Image 1 (cartoon, rainbow, N blue to C red):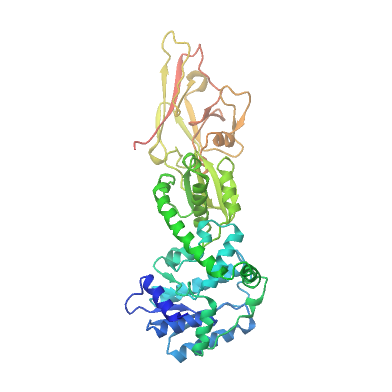
Image 2: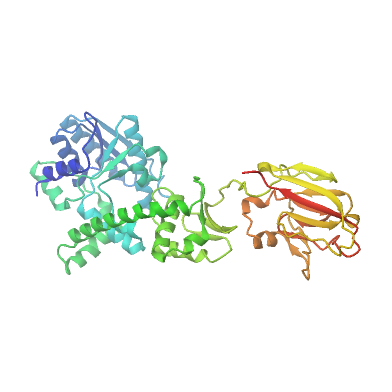
Length: 478
């Protein structure tokens, strides 16, 4: 196989590089990355060699020294860093995941510091086959099974918005590993071998050393077949994402970095396959740093669509039903209070004298007035959500307005016993973010009206009522 022609052809397919722009090449010292660095240099592409020592092996310093010597022999500039030994031993995800994240953070920083727009890495066809199998074993969807793409924005890999202007390319993705090793032999390029690649404690190594050789007994061209399958699924995923672009805007609320709000009824009405794609993308975006989202996580989220309880999901994501919407958020993230709900401006207890008009947050007003019951009328009632009425003489002219307190209870009108306000909020599907400053009307220290939800039995209007105290909230004019 002509590796140089393969690299040149892939670069042309990917749109080449900016004229005169230097490409940052990630190089470990192994055969694939050495082949890529030498190949790009041979094609006249200005390159910078970038090497990160993860500090995971005592002998890893030799890899860095080898890269420096190789780059010097080619007359190429080099950037190299070493991570403090042991610093990757703890953290989220597997050791492989942590090392991968550290590597891409290093490459992104090096590219920005040296005004490089493009970062090239030496993933081969064999790496693609291994990646597809890894995702298959983890229960990934179309995005995972499509494997790695030949080119993408680095932000898609790292989940870091700072990387939005950087491009990651893989010119060797269609080249078998045996071809890169043959290229190194042909050009007498010394390469380093990482002894940890022979350790079966890592999933990728087990796939390379055990699973792929076994599958090759069924299909000798299994690596090429898996790579071709990834290409097909990549095209399918691209088509599906284009179609979703027409559907998703109608489902999602205003964009935010720490949470996503989805119209529950519309999402549930979609076919299960479309639900899974949307949920997987939501979880992936909120989990950050190119997180893997498996089948079990997606199915747990689908099950949560029919629950009104908070559901914890992998990746530190939570989902909760709020007023007919499903809100997905990073654990502990604060969400802004929806402007569609009345909110007090402060936790202070406010005592108001009827009549009054009292301002709330978001353009709402709380009003109170007395009126006489028409002669001959036996009752007074209102069906408006934001309005209620009490017997004015029984209630009194002083109205206390405050925010909910822990343990607050009331006896709702017509109910056999008392209920917690927290339960009434839940029944009313009031967003959690809106509950802390929700207006509560009290009479003689007891909750008389959980505004917009339930009123209490106190001071009920009856046949002997002569004057009515009308309380109501006025919504902002949109």
